[in-house]
Amino acid sequence: MSHTSPERVRAACEQLLADGRDVTFTAVAQTSGISRATCYRDRGLRAVIDTYRARHGEVLTLTSLADRVDHLTASLEAVAAKVRRQEDELRTLKRASTTRRQRSRPAD
Image: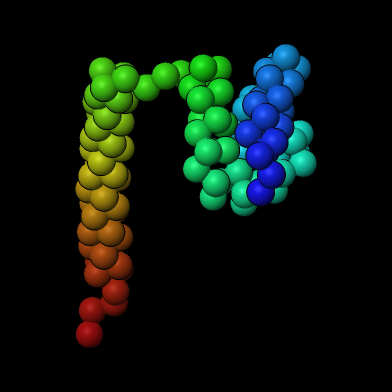
């Protein structure tokens, strides 16, 4: 890898931001002419890209991560409750269906 790669990645990140585009590994690779795999694997290049991504996007703090976990936990609990209600409804419908079939059978 050339010593100019970090500069090319920085320039690509600056260009993406100037164009109003998101800084992603794919976009940086296309703009810089450096393969996406190299951008991922090379720690120096990855650090440059991550720095621009953090500046442009949301910087995650412990508080914001905890808020996200709380939100996801609440969402998961709501989905689990809905699944339990639907499972109960299915059991009720199956019992009703079985009872109807048993009643409609001709007696031997």
